[in-house]
Length: 268
Image 1 (tube, helix red, strand yellow):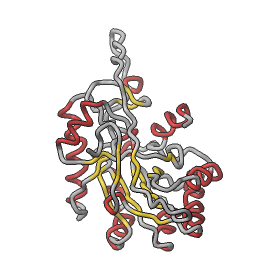
Image 2 (image 1 turned 90 degrees about the vertical axis):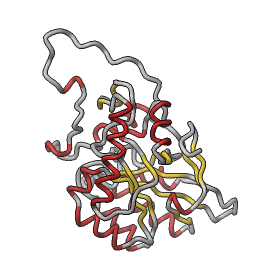
Image 3 (image 1 turned 120 degrees about the vertical axis):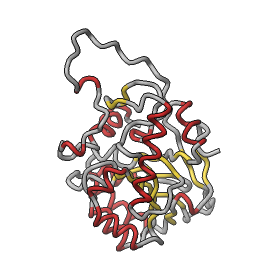
């Protein structure tokens, strides 16, 4: 994986128009006013980026993959959403409370197609679920067990208030965690959704490379892409890759439809 591109992706994918509503509420230290004395550097934290696979079919020519999309902030990408609906392709969508607030029409489409869409928890304010103060791709982490809990519970509360069934999966902003936060989230009753194929590099990749990445998914893979960047070229590549994979006979499933295996104790 291209780590430099991936690092930029998660930070920039949440900033489509740089409006006040779309900026993380917990701003990085570099974005705040300079203190009277130099601020101490956040301590180094061992971050984990869990992988997730689903049960394979183990049948040549009959690959099974799970499509997952993050709806961080910004607007819904109708190129992807309309393709999923038109082609009847199921997917798991991870939504933040802030995205739900800005996208009632897309939410209505999700709720009108319960056979296609499984809606899961991406957090309240798109803050990394790390319980030690640090920066993840320049974004300030939750920083404490209490703040991690608020990020998770706040996202779930917003979903239920919007008429969505209570979520069972959680994927945090940046998809990175520390081991103690993983334990805390699991104690709350959530499975943590890693992935095995990074489809769109946080929505910053071009259409062609995005299409190629998603098309490379193999039997048992879990693909992550974004459905909140309608003006980025990556969305075009996502939509085309979905149609191509369907034509090849790929079986698409939601996370709750099949057995799965996650590392770093994210699903045990």
